[in-house]
Amino acid sequence: KAVKKGELKSLSQGNAGIVIQGACMAPKYSLDVMSSEIIRLYVRNKSDIAPIPISVPRKVQDFYPELYPNTLSNQAYDTTAEAWLKGNDVVPKLLSIDAKLSLFNEESKKKIQEEEKKAQAKKAEEAEKKAKAQAKLEEPSEVRKKISAKLKRSAFVYLGGKSPSSKDKYYYDLKAGKPLHMYKNIDVNSKFIAFPWKAVGGSAVAVIAKEGKMGRLISPPKVRGHTAQVSAFSLSQQQPNRMATGSPEGIVKVWTLPNKPTKDLTDCEIELECSGKVLGTLFHPLVPDVLLTYSAGYSAVDMRLWDLTEKKEKVLIEAHGEAVIWGVTWNHNGSLIATIAKDHRVRIIDPRQNKVVSEFEVSQGSRESTVYFLDTTDDILAVVGVAKGNAREISVHNTKDGKCLDKMEIEGESGSLMPAFDPDTRLLYVSTNGAPSVQFFLLSTESPYIERLDRFKSMQDFKGFVMASKHECDVKNVEVAVGWQLSKNSVIPISFTVPRKRKEFFQDDLFAPTASASPMMSAKAWFEGKSKEEVKYVSLQPEGMGLLSTAPKEKLTQRELKYRAHKQMVAKPKAKGVLGHESAQEVREHFQNLAEMIDTTSNMWDAGGGGASSDDEWSD
Image (cartoon, rainbow, N blue to C red; front, side, top):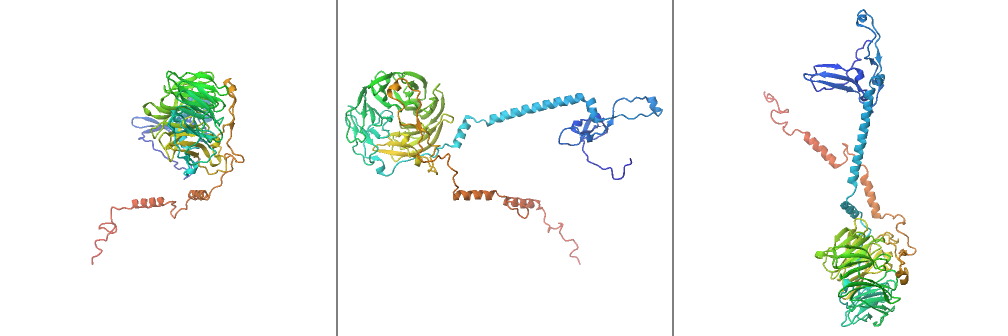
């Protein structure tokens, strides 16, 4: 068929990058048809021969038959040269490119498939390595975990304290006595407040009934009975009318207080004898008539458990040698006690078995220090006190091996510490003798184990500090704790609250169930080893008060509505200007670009310029 004029046209052209001195075309069956290669040229320059593949771009790598018409076969024809010279022509043999793939390129096809499989496997392996590396990068380090936890913020981050400013809301004009061991100079229960009273000769512990009026306190009723000033005392939480006092002579006396004391008490209910100076008395938190005492003699330090119903000693613990005991605490169900002594060792003791369950060394213990269990499994324990070099710090330890999980220095004053701990919220309140502030820390059984919160500053310096029972909190006003401060001449209640907007609901994220005030078992059953009874926990939710977690969604305030409307307005697409600009910055950039295009190197009015006049313009 003849080609008409205009049917041939140039499609495209490329640059080989070399000076071509010769070229030839490769046979069709040698093309890489899977890459849509339609022609392969071999070109020669002065020193090299190079292939130039020409292909049709396709999105998917595959065989496209429309690109490959049948081509001449490379098989031999059934003829000879003589026959051809005599004019005997033969019909050309055409070969389908598709057939050619199956006939001549099976090995190449297999190689391509194998290479593709290898490439896919390598790609999958690289993707897996990349995913692992990314996961490793995304996995937070210990430092990152601490930072993330701080950024998330605790529900108690805005915890604050408030003390009454009016004198009729606290006790004043009193005479507090000398500080006792571990500065346990004040104790409270649901009925009474007790603290040492300044006395000349003999002992005096002032006892104030909470039901009475607050205000000036010149001469409150006192418990007297020891020949020297008391060295330790405590009030029972299970039996609010019961109190224990100890003296340097090694005598412990148990008292029964009237509901409204009006005169001094001199006759005790029970008298017990210890060896050496009594350092502390501690009632069982859940079982009535069980008393723990610890004392320091000339040659040894011992602890004793007393059954007050039988008025006799049940267990004598001599695990501390000559090391003076600083702090003692019960675990959540009263089956174990933890102690820290002057030898810098923490001991977890099963008191009824008279057995040390775990023992490890800590940095604290040089001076006043104490310990607290952080969970119901008794696996995590916090130590608060003074370490070597007079460093005041908090540390968290695993009770199984004693490993220190975290540590934080207590900043501020350098006086003796007077900590108090709330096991329900794990909030630690740390006051300092002779200083006016209380620092807040949130302890945890997971990293970060210690979080520093805010602090409260009182109007007077602390001489003693203790926390009241959680059952006394005003939950309707989000009061998470009530503390009592003893100063030089005052006893002041401190209300610790968390600011919340929706106070009409019970803040169940702040108030965890707390141990019931009812006894868990009798003293006889407890000494017989019945320790597996579950602690009864009760909710502090007032009757008729709904939970915040299930409360309906809060309505937005006018301020919040205005803020949201402003955000929506800002997010709307802005109207375009005449030139299509959407912002002042784009307009500014547009005119700056125009200014850059103006030739500022020449002036059209200069002589010889494009706008200058001709030489003969002013001639006659």
